[in-house]
Image (cartoon, rainbow, N blue to C red; front, side, top):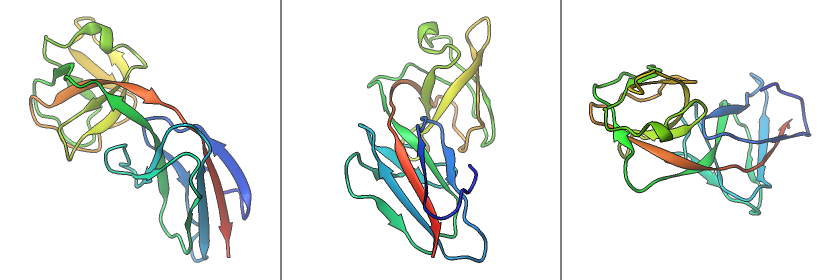
Length: 173
């Protein structure tokens, strides 16, 4: 995301996959104000931010403000996974991987191009979006690389996405 200078508001529509919202100007006292003007929580954090590890910014609360911000900030929208896993992966994956081999038991209806899903167990869960699906529906390609490694039999969950709006105001003191 571009830095537009002090006091310039930008309204974003976060997706479940992390997106950059702020990069500080080196050597200056950067400030950042985030206000959720949507209807669902959004989450902020580092490049691996997710609804499972991010700082929640709830709708209608006072803005979250940072002074002397020296780190790049990312955001994502909220998701709710179905209560039962939609399947598992058949072999371990490494961080940075963007293709996963799913067990034959994975239902084809939940994993189509554009579908958002959660992979992993508590502590290393992350949200990804399907980019490609093999003809046999056993290989799922994603739009971004996984941040975490996942063990064989890591669960796959289809999700409901809860979009929101985040107003970002960056400045310099």
